[in-house]
Image 1 (cartoon, rainbow, N blue to C red):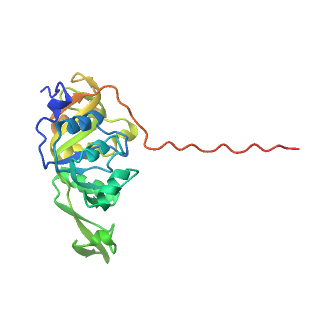
Image 2: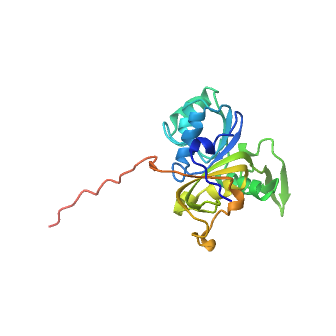
Image 3: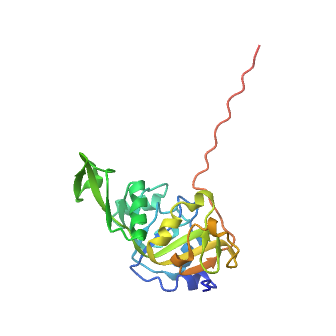
Length: 238
């Protein structure tokens, strides 16, 4: 079944106001740049977004933020997004921060059909507020619920027309688990190939999880922050 759509507008056409959306990426690595811009153009509002962070000011999910389209964000890291900081402090957006390992497992559980699980992470901290605590082998554990979404917007390095996907290096990050945890997964791929061109043993996300495929072009691939190490001052000998 050919799942390729002709444009980003078509790819996000059924995303509605108030939807819960998972967005792949870690920082700016592996984000679906084109799908995010299409969502900004569509203008849907009151979104609940689930992603590691919210991009940076003026790029990535930061575009959704500045357009006022996000009502609530669930993630692990505030990052360098000063607009997000201001909006949280001003009460314009609801922010739920989760320990990163717990965040990963909650998404994985959502994709695996596991409603909840227990973890020791966060016991005795604010993370434990209003959560069930049980003891196993003499150690307290928190019950955490699975995370699921209406839509997942993900990025892959290569995909075929059926929706089988391959990720490249660190751009793999949250994309594979998010692909499994949404009702509709939309994949933005950098290279689009014919069915059978991918080595089956190298496929990270099978096509059964993917509803639509779009080929993106001209990626910016920005870096959040460039840090340069100062060269040591040469010393003279003798």
